[in-house]
Image (tube, rainbow, N blue to C red):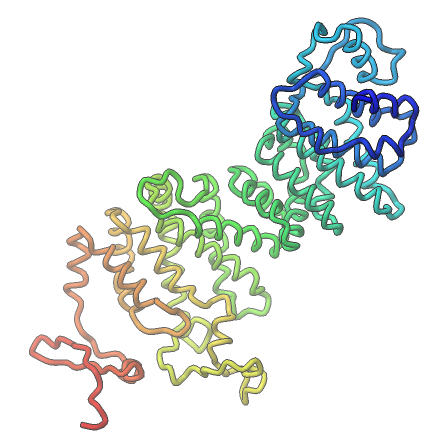
Length: 512
């Protein structure tokens, strides 16, 4: 007996056991050219699935869902079938269509070789997803598979068969499954939401609960579900998404989004001519800068018990992101930040305040310039066993504090913002920024590479700017900084000549 005749016979006889043995989901991955037999096969499976008068075994439902999900992949495209005449006597549209095909064969006014009316299947699947996801009793294994495969069908359908249809209801109902504790279900739900965000975001963006979606996606990202991370990466680059959700989510979720953005810009290309090397739209970049400007004053509260380390970490992460963005070669993005005068002023005065604060007392911004002041202890109990924990300073403790590398980050951004930008170069000079940067050219264990970043910033300030060059030229020596700092590096400072020039020389050998 031909496969389709066997299929029809099993359905009419309700011989579910035999039907489960002859239905092969891989047979529904049809390749071109398609035949009328392929269409009829999908038609009968659809008719069986949506027939509410039948009590189908859950195992059979799973096989039917697999077959229909496969039929969407490069096989049939969605097209609604509008029958002529009264069909009220039929159980569903598929039974009527089957009889029409049997009667008219290829003369039926519907493109059977390229399209299929999936409408009723989608409605059935969304209905079953709602029922199973809201069930009060714990689902058995087969029911969990029905839920998972229903999601898989939607994922395939809206990805391959129906790229222009509205799927608002299905997305809304699936959001809470994105962070489901059952990994197989969460994985498929995340894949579905990712594909919908990528292809149909504008259709459901205004109706979804963005806070809930973000929280659930982060939960699954932490559970190492790649589709959740990919969905978040798409969302954070939507111009309005961050603005609407950022202040509504917890500080932990904010840091997670910022880390995703950091990884995005950090992994972007640096080559000249790349249209968007950071991978972020300008509106998103400007929003991140606005957040930084509003929250940067919180860094002064780092020694206040009311100021959470997470809040300070948020500011430093923003600074890291902006530092990378301003170092990329995209002229439009860089110009947008360089033209934001208030942002440059904010960075400069923040650096000035932090620099002065570090000199006033022993705090997390006080430079550590002598290596022998730093306990180079890598033991896990180093801090716990210190005689005076309040004054104990070791590399582990300073690296763990959010203020670590903060000044260096600020100087990096300032140096990038003044690069080949005359107005910004002048702005730094007019606000006494050049002496400040010169004063930052010292070794500081709390700010690795700060000397190099400060020198680069000064270089960018002086380039093609005679006024700034004159400021440095007129600088006078008021003394030599603590020689013991350089001695720890095996060097010494040596002053010579009438012009009081200073040279760096190696320490004399002990054998001499």
